[in-house]
Image (cartoon, rainbow, N blue to C red; front, side):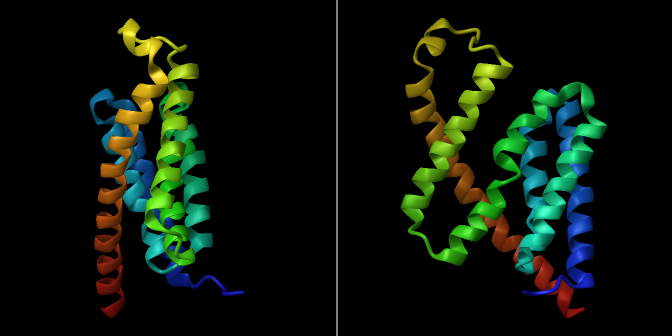
Length: 174
């Protein structure tokens, strides 16, 4: 079993701090909520650049705990991050490590995303929105539009992963 190095601990701590900051900014600004999730996920990729799954798990857990502490009045805004966005980078890394077919993995992850959005719609919004037709056909709408959004999001996250890996590699050379 591989021991976690001081460099990986530092990357995990930095990752947690940056992710918590972006998550808190996003939660406190309705316009920046998704942006906060996105940048928090990107920050959480730092330990994964060193293949530190333990570091990632600790950074994710600490980010969730700190997110709840700093945003205790907005717990439902943190739910999508806890259920999906915060876990997505490690699932992508696991998919690459185990060499699962990317189309099969994308379909499974899209269903996971759709299920998360359904839970948010159901329990956070009480199963209602401003559009009655949307409420009536929420499952097909999520399966079509949620999955389409997810495919674009997943592609973007893989691109960001490559950028984060290059950044960490450049830091290692110095």
